[in-house]
Image (cartoon, rainbow, N blue to C red; front, side, top):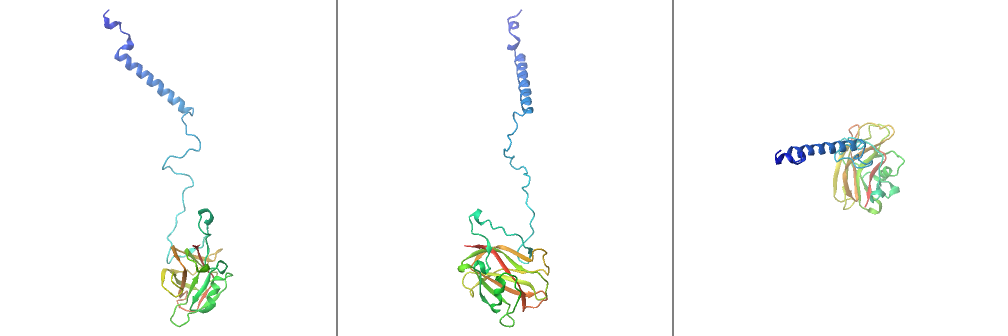
Length: 234
């Protein structure tokens, strides 16, 4: 027998390859078996993979809001204590320090901030002028706000149809910038008589409300109820 024939089968190249294949096959079977019995399963409570959907994480679709868009009033979420921000309040309410400082319709405008849904008719001080009033906040402080609400529990031709909101910082008779013009639909929301109008957050010391047109198209002698301005004092 030749000297090369005396070498063991395992010392030949075919033998080595056969041995490696056998080892790989054995390891693969071992891994599969361990996975089946749960050795490699993810521990309970571990994070889901990035980008995978999470149950309950979806949000409701929101429609457009802003000028000329009336929304049914929604519950107020203050969140002030949790976020460290001041509490969200109705800035116009007399109980919260709100006050009417200038009005071309006289003292009747105070009915809009007393609560209790007091109906009152307001008119401009002179023919051709739009009825308007300027409100200040507690201790004449600056506030940030983004929602205005109008109480409406009945339909009447002299109800407000369109109005304009303006914000000022100088003085009650100084320069004001328009927040937007809004339209109230001639409807009553069942169960919640406040019609809410949202806009981009603004900051200022004064809010001016200017009444532009009644539901019947006239521009004077409006019937008005309670106003609310939701925001936070600085």
